Image 1 (cartoon, rainbow, N blue to C red):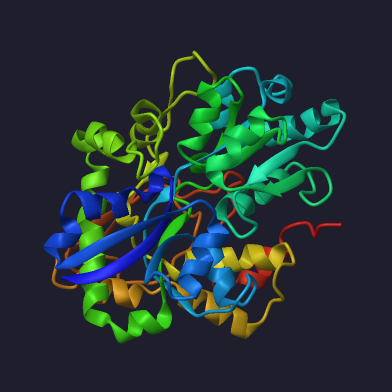
Image 2 (cartoon, rainbow, N blue to C red):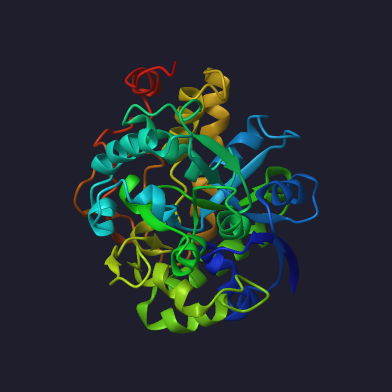
Length: 403
């Protein structure tokens, strides 16, 4: 058995890692999987960078940032596998949410209108709302900035973004330290269940099939250990398919609820798995069937265009200076070549291209691939813009420059 240590945070989207260990997918590939639970993304990042673990359940933008030298110690990282798409909620305290569209389901289904309501609510709040984000370099923070700016809200002027670990968000709301937060499940649902918050926006409606967590490895370790890496990816692929099977939802929720993993009630965890989100305490669920995906629709495939979208947002928000070198390093952090190598002998159909125009699909699209067909799901951004990875400068220039 090959031992591999992987760091993770207590989030529902760590499910494929947990299932790979607990349901035997890793063992079947000759891997003794040791999962190390961390509290913060900064600690998890350091474990990976300094070699305490071989891989990590990681925020995709954080992996890009580390590779670009933006986050503590620079280190070459690679992401040959995506663990999930979407899975986040923006929740706000009831007193703030009272100034928004009263029907929370309508809020979730019309994020552009909700952004404008949010801008008006800031004016009624009599102070800058404090919004928790899990890390500066997170998909959550980047899509939140994008969404706020669409309504003329300057994220660095009109609100306060406070970095907190996801598992501490609910207690921070209870203590009155933040007015809301955006984080992966089950933490938004936990705040709603406690009556501390209401849902305002769902990641799955801000960018459908938006990039989220990746299985991230140190590039040097990955290149020195091709056989264990391939076996690990095959284990992840089997585990992710198990996670996405509706017949396994109850068992998966029970597994994640264990103290060693997410340590939250199974019924809270099940909401994201089923795509039935209770947006306000005591109300009927809102159906968001694509709220969180693990395997179907080529979820796991590491599209380099998604890494470049992250890069475009770092440029937009002046977190990195645009350059050909930075663009290349960001794109190459995602490794579809390793994904293809690992799964070449499996029955997993995979795209032939490594990049696509992001945000171009408003309906499912079946594409032919060497081993059959893949149906790609809608991938629209809430404002209907499309991101062409060959025209990044034009894309960034299309947004109003922050003052």
